[in-house]
Amino acid sequence: MFPSSRRVAEVAGTAVGIVGLLLFGVVSGADLLTVTVDALSVHLAFFDGMLSVVAFTAFVLATGTYVLWGVWGDGGAERATEGAPVCAVVPAYRDADVVDICVESLLDSDYDPVEVAVVVEPDDRRTRRRAAALAADHDAVSCLVNGNPGSKAGAINHAVEHSDADHFAVFDADERVAPEFLPAAMGELLDGADVFQGRRIPRPTGVVESLAYCERVVVQAGYAAAEPFGFTHCQSSSTAFTRAAVEAVGGYDDRLTEDIDFSHKCHSAGLTVRRRRDVANTMEAPHSLRDLWGQRKRWRIGHVEVVEARLRETVAADVGADDLLSVGRAAGAVAAGAFLLVCFAQVLFLLLQGVEWAVALPYASVLGVVGGVWLRDHTRGRVGRPGAGLLLAPLVYLGHGVLTVKALLEYCLTWDGEWYQVTKVGA
Image 1 (cartoon, one colour):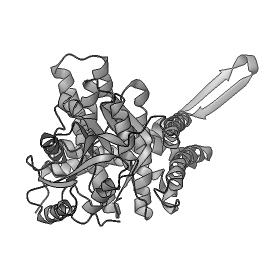
Image 2 (cartoon, rainbow, N blue to C red):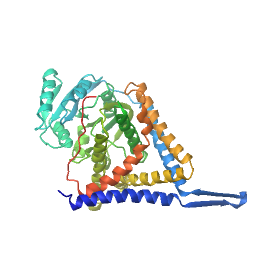
Image 3 (tube, rainbow, N blue to C red):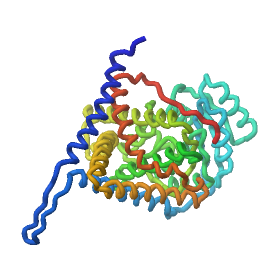
Image 4 (spheres, rainbow, N blue to C red):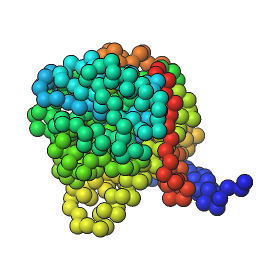
């Protein structure tokens, strides 16, 4: 069977887009700029690409320092160890082999009382049996069958609708929740926050898994760039919120990346979102390059979906400064991918011209940021010592550039709503 015309256009467009951005990077980076200061008899000549490299390095160091400050700090907030009941929602689909990890870690939480609601899909019998067994073994655990089947967003909304609690926390089934997470989250919510966001990190048990860990650090640093301007990213995992907050935004919407969409809804509603990077849970990382690519491509397609939704909402309604920030944040996340390919090409061009520092400077800055975060996680017992995968961290930027072009063309031409699920084995 021959591929459809749309599929051919998507593949060809992706190739042309990637090559075009790389060529543009080489051409623009090769422009020779000159600066003359007559009073000092100084005449300087340098490639335009050097400016891009310096700007990229400055961005990495600025956002990376902000992230490191949060990771190494203690948050400076009180932690609540008891109080109002918390409903911990664990959406689970094809997660029979890993759901114990999340449930058992929640039962060991330093906060009391905690009710754990595992929400399963109607057609997932294995996970339903395992969740029912956990509910039978623990009074604090219940098994709910998703009344809005087909999405994580529907599972979260279903759990909220069927709970009497006023405070909720959401976790992935493979997430190992730190004992201090719920005390920190409830401390913030009781202090007036509407939404609390902790940090979630892949467990780097191998080279691919380490690359996934590095990618999360890099992406979180990118998210941090918008925080000084009032936009704080919140997710659908390692997240806590009040009932009033979720009702104010109408719950989670059924999107490929419901968490990114939720972030924009919270921002538009003027909710107070507090992020604590010193509080971190771990999750299972993809174990193969195929899974890593498939999962990250799904997330990038989700970014594009959110951009379209935000643009449509902006056109259909009056917009204010906060709305423009939200749209800019969404579109900027996609546009940054194009810049990464351009910058990568400029770095290669400069290397061929013998400008070694153009490689060493950004490489060292990326390793410094990722290594600093990894060191903190290691000293806190969350991950093992850094391995060879850490040296591959700069490749994350190239991968994001390629994924952005691929996701944009696939979303516009061939994506039919399907999403990729990685293999989970309980590692």
